[in-house]
Length: 472
Image (cartoon, rainbow, N blue to C red; front, side):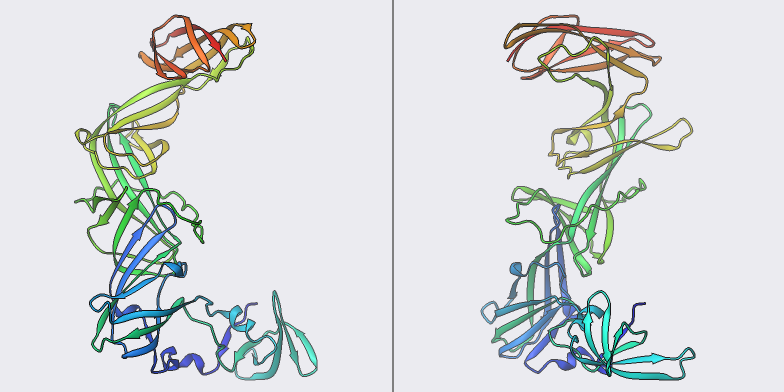
């Protein structure tokens, strides 16, 4: 049973009373503005200003309410209007937080009081004990006996040194400004991330759709940012070292396709990245995931393709038996202004939906995309067709020399739908290749692949045959 730790009398006094006149404390309540920039790589940039009056000369300032995952070496502090009048001479980051374990760790070998109330809480027994160990279980010496644990409350006579209630930056500063001044403090912190999540609602004609984009912002940095200016940066920022704290991907959240009345983000380029500025202030609470709409495009043009990918080249006879291959369903659209888009689409997951015959929206697949600049095409593999079959057979194989091979392939495409469909058959080729004969026209799609586009009648089939010579 976990026991509470009582700090006799001490917790009744504000921590501010412990500060000397030369040591000041700055808290969130003195904040006049805060800006939070969140990156795609478990990184956040915090910029905040606080208004305060500092004594002239050297002193100590405890700057509190900062992120617990702060990168101390990234801290920059300056007076906004009196840059020459204020400077930080020395900085210490205090992150040994006050809790039951850290308090008791500092009392190993020291005396404390153990208090045990009876069942009706009208009488208590007290004992003075020495804490011998605070590992998995606590070990006490009471008089000449050793107790392995104790059911009572632990009461400490005083607060140990070097423990803080929350993460704190402790500064030794020099100041020559007599009046109130605004200090701007910026720092990097781990524990922050954002991803883009999209919903593509395919229309019944399968030629148009609506696209909604949501920014999912994660804050696990250890503090809350109230009424913050929020910026999101799309792009992979290089880091000299790995981030100190990992941020696990949040589980996918189901989003309703609700329309934002006006665009909420303003996009602008910065260096080789793109930023999205939220046009209103937002509060990011610690250990919170928040979703904000950033894209709403209606009636964008899409196209659907059925694609079969052939097997890689093997310099040997494979099998005489037909090899069943999936017929992939792929949806394409252009990220252009003419298609009601055109801005950079941040990396994320696109989830596709379509209404069934009864008007119920059904999930039909998802695909992860990288950052997509304007005027580029987006390709989304949604799954595999159930009414289309592809069977591939190696009908001939010859080894002409140690590095020269000749083979023939036949792919049978069967269509169990009622209407004609077009299927793209992409064949990967290796080395120096040359197609000797082919039943259907093809086009070269890369240095090592060709594509056959084949029309297959409803309820029928088509056979694609080609012979190729490959030199390795």
